[in-house]
Length: 167
Image 1 (cartoon, rainbow, N blue to C red):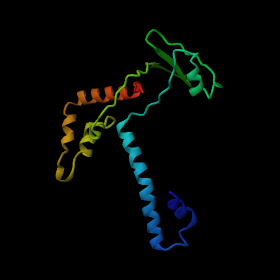
Image 2 (spheres, helix red, strand yellow; image 1 turned 30 degrees about the vertical axis):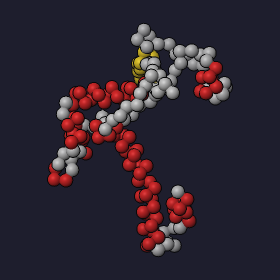
Image 3 (tube, one colour; image 1 turned 180 degrees about the horizontal axis):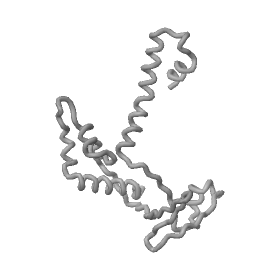
Image 4 (cartoon, rainbow, N blue to C red; image 1 turned 45 degrees about the horizontal axis):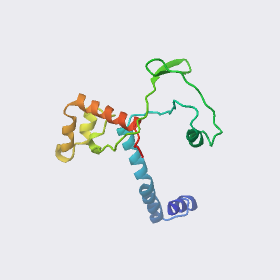
C-alpha cells in the first residue's frame, strides 16, 4: 500500500517515464482489482439488505456496555403487532417489517460458491458457468430445478442473517 501511495501521490504523469506509468497502472490493478472483484461477487450473491437489532430487555448491563456507547446511549421502545410486525414510515411511504429473533445455535454453512448466485437470473447464471466452446460447468446441475434452487438460496440467506454461533 505504501508503494502504491508513493507512486500515485509523488509522481505526476508529466514527470515519469512510460515504464513508471505502466508500473503505476499495474500496481493499481494489483491493489484495487481484488477488492473491486470481491465486492462485485458480494453483489451477485447476497441481496441488498439492512439489519437492525432489537432486544426484548432494556435492563441488561452487558448490552448497555457493548452497544450503547459505554452506557451513554438511550433506549427506544418499538411496538409490534401480534405477528411481530413493525410499522416504519419513510417520508410518505409506510412499510411493515417483521422482527425476527436471533438464534444463538447457528452452525457454519458450507456452500459451493458457484451455487450461490441467488440474485442472478437463470440465463445469467448459465452465462457465468459457460466456458470455452460452450461447455457448461457441472455446477449448473444445481440450478435444474429453479424453484428449489431459489428456495434453498432464501433458506440459506435467512439462516446466515438470523443465526449466530453459540460462541
